[in-house]
Image (cartoon, each protein chain N blue to C red):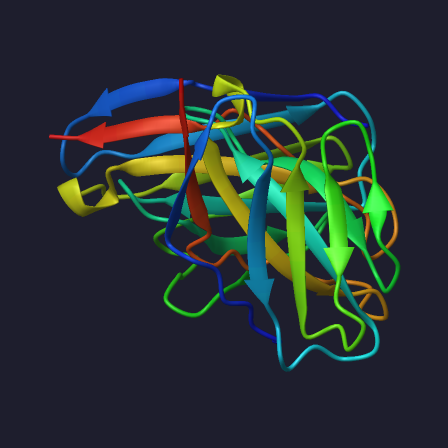
Length: 112
Length: 115
């Protein structure tokens, strides 16, 4: 499985933008980049995913490097509710029975 | 989307006993997974629950310890057998509703403490 590397932890001030980086230098052409987050005492929830182009949804934006070897999850305005562990995961869309393997993720703290 | 009901939400068990965790989904799903999350750690995949056949276990997990059933497309159980304190973890059910690369949905987990 292609692997990802994320910082263990990050801090952000409330109402400021947050940029969460992810490195995936061994990404293959059929790997999508997925982001999930896990709020305290909850199961993970889907945030966003993309292949090559930048993506936006109501939760966040995903910026993908031109060579696809890195990506950045952008929270435009952090709130206290965004304090969570964020996981960057690669998923191969050609694999029908793909299993999702979680790395350590980035623990985001939001300071009031 | 999928709404997952996982039961029990938490339990405290004695060493040597077994606990069965249920995962019920409100719609038919293509794949179901069971994860374990030890305190302060990330999620570890235990197995893929296959409908009508034996589950596919990841390295380090065996059927005798973690028997899994999936009798239909909306329900699965995970049993933690002959428990020891090392089994104290959160156990999470996850489902995929469509084709490969579709998003995963997670239950809220079962917090298990073994005394």
